[in-house]
Image 1 (spheres, each protein chain N blue to C red):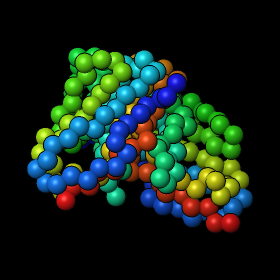
Image 2 (image 1 turned 180 degrees about the horizontal axis):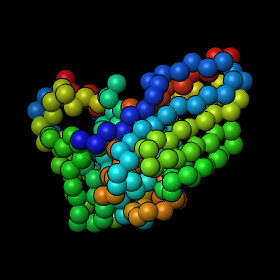
Image 3 (image 1 turned 60 degrees about the vertical axis):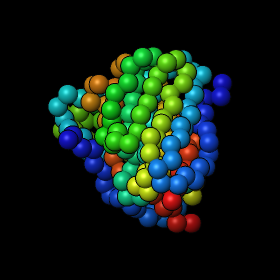
Image 4 (image 1 turned 90 degrees about the vertical axis):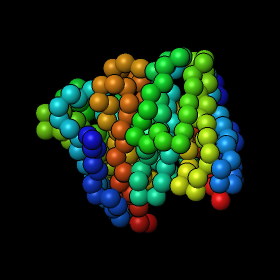
Length: 111
Length: 115
């Protein structure tokens, strides 16, 4: 079984601080990596789809980087706000179209 | 566009009953999939389809059947419900292929309780 791992499992961050967390995946046979934001009682929503080594994506205060050779992606949030509280999921496409999800990083922003 | 729709939103079954969870999308996506969400387990893939007439198993397919007769619809059937199938079920869809805009869209979820 090829695993996607996320760390940390949970994180508490003071409002206004910046933070980051990690998604690790098998470095062989890379196809694509997805990041999703999942608020409680809602459905996951896509943040980024990353396909190339060295990719950097940005959406407002959230950005992500990708290193396919070493098998990791970082998600950064700059100047955290209460509305950033959510679970952040990464998902790996092994090349057969299936997306395998990590268990997520649960982020809580403390006002 | 309605996006990805799922029905019902909530369902309670007795052990041994069968039912079908409905999923439809109006974005002409080739890929559709079903996940279940359990505490501490994240999203686990049940079945998926890359186009009409094509389905395949995910990580946890036992106890579930799917079919894909049209591009739009991807129903999930529970053949004989068991308490272990109590979960929240999400349907999702996206375009296939290696493209940076083929993000996955999720339905609102179905909360299923099996007594």
